[in-house]
Amino acid sequence: MSWFYLALLAPLLYAITNLIDDNLLSFVYKSPYLATVSAGFYGMLPLLSRFFINAHALRPTLALLAAGAGFLTLAYYFFYFKGLESDSPSIVIALFSLAPATIPFFAHFIVHEHLSGSEILGLIVVLVASMGLAVSNLRQLKFSKALVPVIIAVVFMDAIAIMTKYAYQRADFYPVYLYFSGGMGIGGLFFLLLKFQDNKRGILEIKKSIK
Image (tube, rainbow, N blue to C red; front, side):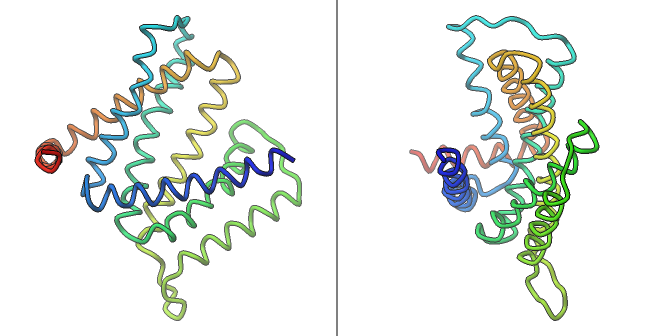
């Protein structure tokens, strides 16, 4: 039954991370772009381990897949931060329950995983419950402003899960993860340049607050 406690621990840690991210976004970064840039540059720190640990090269297709998953992770973070900017952390984290409910459907059509009838029924229940939590005004059927960015983030999350699973099943963890980290670094650079002047001002403000 150890898996059960681990399954409970994961959402607990994610909830704590969600609250920390919300505070960082509100009081430190003050912009989804700068928060995403920070995530990208921190995400490439594992590349420093290459100076101490040897890693063999990957096939070009797997290398591109791993790096692409890293880049998409930054796109996922951006829409995740947009969701936090739009609504409270409790709503955002509840909406992210769409991810485990939608991944099996993508996996069924992309990598041909089999779904039983009870699994499909359970996934539909989760989808309906998540959409119900997104309703902010039942009479007018008005949804939370976080719904659209979170749905986009969930789609990216599903794609990342399938891409990384495919790569990890065909190569060792360490080299795949290095390419994944490199992709996150490229994503961080992309979002830095996308709003360079705003990000530059935000970085200068953070430097002043640190002083």
